[in-house]
Image (tube, rainbow, N blue to C red; front, side):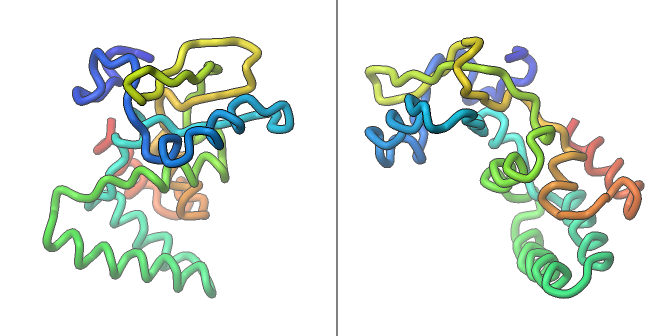
Length: 172
């Protein structure tokens, strides 16, 4: 991973704990070693923790809610209204890491991926090393525009180009 993309809290670490894998280590090890799973795609903490629901993303959600129809519009409206109240209390925004993992399910191009082997450190943390042919891929960066379009389910570049450009500039 490029050094300038590593968050300060992860700088110098080779491994760190993760809630999802440490919640059931035998299951995590079985999934990582399974030949029945041909391709494993993981969202790294370093990338997930860079995603923030802020005022710029909030404006994108509003545009998406206005453009959507039916249950899609209702759901986006609920997100917008909930986050409107949240942002009034905390204008710096909210870390929005789980939605990045969801975006990867919809569109793997939302992230730049590296093929790795995951390993568990004696301290209980998890780390990764590049490993071609492993079938395990981890995010090393993300594309804010692809993330927003994947998570909001609309072609934002056509619907809200100014808002999308503002959001992408804010996270660069």
